Image (tube, rainbow, N blue to C red; front, side, top):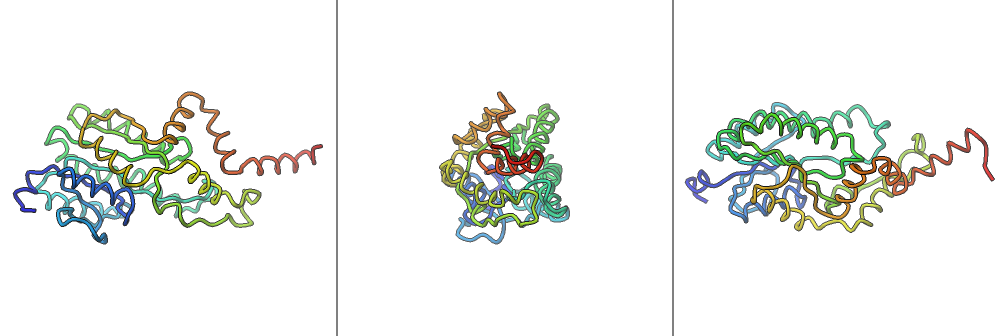
Length: 278
């Protein structure tokens, strides 16, 4: 693809592009729609017109370098940023290490904000920029909820400049994130439900996860159309959790406890406090 064509085409920067993951497939979908896509340099099997930019959202210096390179490759034009990077840590929040918490916080809050700050001028200059966050089930993730709050704040601040901030919520997507799980250690507060990570995986598979290519095509269609609502849902599990969150919030803890076996912990604690019940 010639430099002239690259300069004229709309461009999109996608974070989190592991091989065969959602970001990887989204880059291909956007390129097929005539856009220039940027992703990670380690990827193989992508078209030459999909430009590669090394980006580590956990490293502030890396974010700055990536923003500069993205602008250089696209002749100063970045029309859309898709915040897709994430990590799955199937450990109860109160038992996560400081390192795990910090990594998730950088991916959900610090990194996306730094990247947005570094590229906000090009988004504003073209008058129709988009900030898109790919999200999942807000009700059971503290950091997803925090990222949604960040999106809400940016939506209000950037509205006068014509930059749309959207959150596109997907249900379970069939990627590699859930493939490697281990039971909780015997020292865990949740030892009575030590198989919680495996039950989470089983629950995930029971929801008939969306194929990654179907999910990426839906995301691409909403980005290209440019008329997505502030929050949109795709997939039955996303809609279910969205309804539970907004219309009956006490339903969420019950759903989570039932699906992940936490009832066993609750029963065990009751017996320890009051003795065995007949």
